[in-house]
Image (cartoon, rainbow, N blue to C red; front, side, top):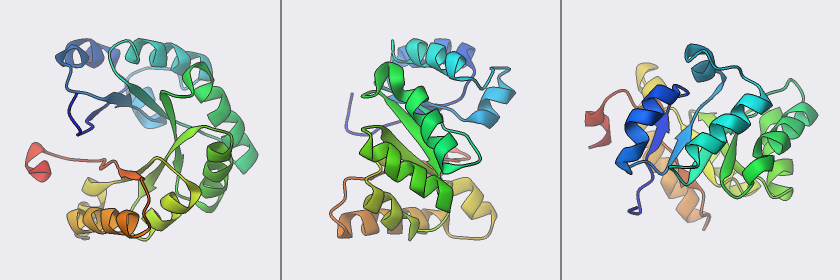
Length: 180
């Protein structure tokens, strides 16, 4: 694969069957909303099964931790990543509780993506906790009247300015033209 990392953002395994054999995707990413839309149970057991399938054709599988407390998010993240800690990335929202959970997960050797990001300053948080990825929601920022592309570019500047290797995983892309 090239240096770019495209992720297939769906829990619909029929789409995986159609698109993953193209070889263009570095990984698959999903979340509880996508699981619900695809009729997939949002359970540790099901996500382990989905990860095993996705990792046959890709390098990484991302899935989102859940819980109402830091401890619940950490416990869930540890369980989600258990089958392939070096290839499963746990997504955690950029909230106070999520950042605490992300920090604990990173310290435990779990690969983390801070998700639901809307401001370039959140890249400082991702870099500081040692997250591997930060996922700004480009489409949602743009729809809310922000210059989403500019926010993403500023996130990259922040990461580089902090000598961080955090990757900017631009999410919520509404059309291919946005990527050009």
